[in-house]
Length: 298
Image (cartoon, rainbow, N blue to C red; front, top):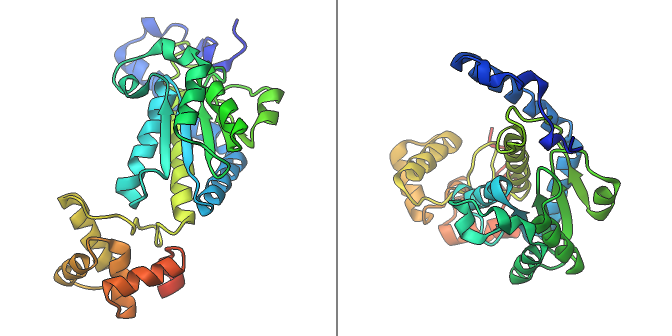
């Protein structure tokens, strides 16, 4: 049998093809409940990755995910969520996927076998010493990912690896951080879009969210760095202002309009009696941290 956990057979689902629909649902759900605990076992390594990301952001660098298949798509998804959620520069968190954009909608299975393509993608991104590249390969063996990470290290970047099987000593020695939530064999043998994919999503959520918190894009637990670009975000922005400032919706709408649709700026404008330009300058002076300017949200 393959030594990788992601390729082993799960004895608990060995007769899944004989179960009723409800029993299949219960079995999958029972397996899924083990994922969060496995991710929790990697808490220190996840925190290490977050500190590396924040350090690179402070130097003007980027977080870049590199993956193939499900792993690559999850990296693309996480990166794509940063601009609308936190008004992050689209270049701050990026993703490389084997097979390029076509692989987002249609499987490009052979693309993951070419390490030179991973290296070329790193070159195309002009990765450098201020960047952190996180390779995502639940099996730990994807050539595209290893090619990308090898080139990233050659170019001086910090690197990490996220996998769902036992990492080799060589892998641990090669990277600044290795995150390995051991979720065990999948319900359907080798179908790593399931538990391994869920673990990957949880880890990426934690890394990117904590990095945004650490870089001043959250006030209390509110996503105050959002930029109003649609009706949903207009409503959310107004409600955040109503909650944090104790104003009525009409006043919240006025502040949001004068701030250019930027919630963080609107809060500082109101709390410190500044115009939008003054508020933006004050925020820049403290690295974007509202708490340093106006105190705790509570």
